[in-house]
Image (cartoon, rainbow, N blue to C red; front, side, top):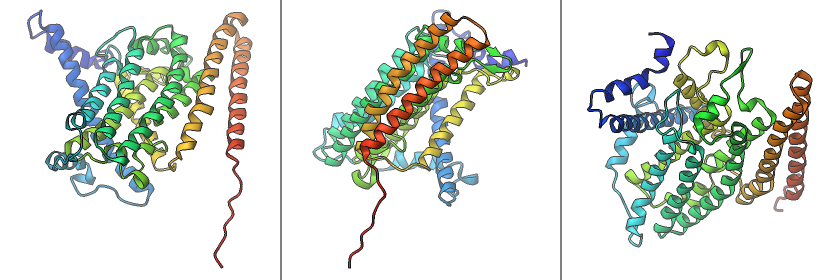
Length: 400
């Protein structure tokens, strides 16, 4: 089996299975197989991620983590799934039963819809439409509704407060998340994820033309990652689930399989948004070096996805939780201005390239100008925020 066949193995397998059916049914069978692939692969990665995260955090905290079920605890997700399915489903007496039931279902369905336009390899995307990025952000916004449904329907003050925190946080960070993604769309001239990946497919020597290797691309990628952490309620932005003050936040009154759906939705959302970050700034399924293009495209995508998941786990074991005022100030006073400025820098990068022409000197000037603007803005905004917080050395007083 040559590298081209291995790269298209799953595409060829899908076409081969679909060809077994009548011609009228083949498009439907092909689409069903794609849906089954998404529904099977990403929840399986979720199950693996839960083990890796618990064992990774255990090592960071000088613990072993899961080590009882299966070799090295690798079968722990199966035990957790059985436990979730068999636990009693308790609903508060005053809860709105219909909304309480629909909230986790809406969350999971909305997140799965985002995977429909995510290219996980060459020719491996369920819906290759021109407005794929727009669809992703549109369905992603509906997760805020599902979280509010969960908090409001529970008739619990802790749940409602967690839901209000989540909605405020997700709306605040959705703006810089969208603006950070716009720079990649501007440079590509298309809202199609496949077109954005293909625009980053070239090489200079052995190095790829990924957007992250430009000043505006690096700034956009950094802003996208920070906003993605807040959008998916990951540490240090996990205030909606603040156990120390909210029990468990918006899903305090959920148990059994409904709680497992929220848990599944959080991790699927994390993987989905990581996948789009890879697509927008890290070349999607593209190889990191020109001499590694023989490796299948889907293998590169999932390798990058696992690295992103590891990064999220590492942050969870490293950074403490922010306060609510710090979280909101950071979104509106730092992330938003820097995202807007990055749009201007991306435009300047484009027009400076046309004005200065080609050549090494012109490229160096363009780099220095764009990088200097972003660094200067970063320093000024950071100093302003620190000055407003009035941080001073902590003093201790003891009782006599």
